[in-house]
Length: 168
Image (cartoon, rainbow, N blue to C red; front, side):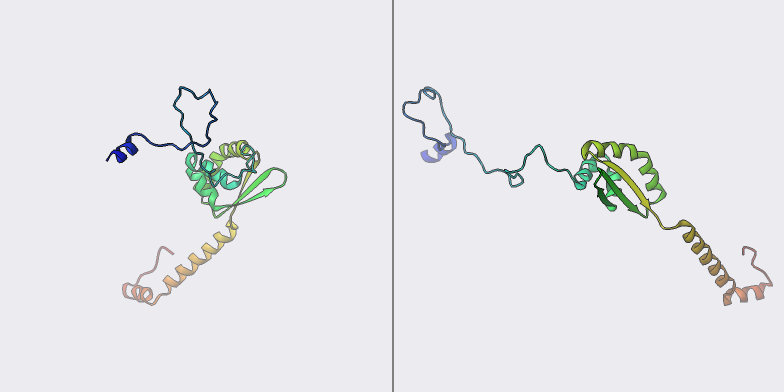
């Protein structure tokens, strides 16, 4: 029991260096040795910690908490870095809501990017040709109406009630 009490009440320290017998600087003081741990696995000794290269992913992590909607939107895009200090982000199939949010936060995003990455940010929204999509939609609607108008049950209902379709 005395050994276990001694271990609990008085931790033992192993000296990192044995002081010389004629060393007067530690006389009269309690000295404790400190063991140094290994460096963290993320740190490389040959890297200068002040000159770490910041990437687009680092930028996204930076805005994740402050601008979560922009983080989610920009994460879906593809970022390309130009040699002249510019980053171009291309976003596909953005809704009008997404576009409005981008327009409202564009200045803030550009200033954060300029400060953090030291580069200009350009956001391009790629969307399919809207005119082609609209004409395809009208064609589909017309075909659907014609199919409904000529459906056998509709034709039979017209005969029974001697009626016509007004909303065509």
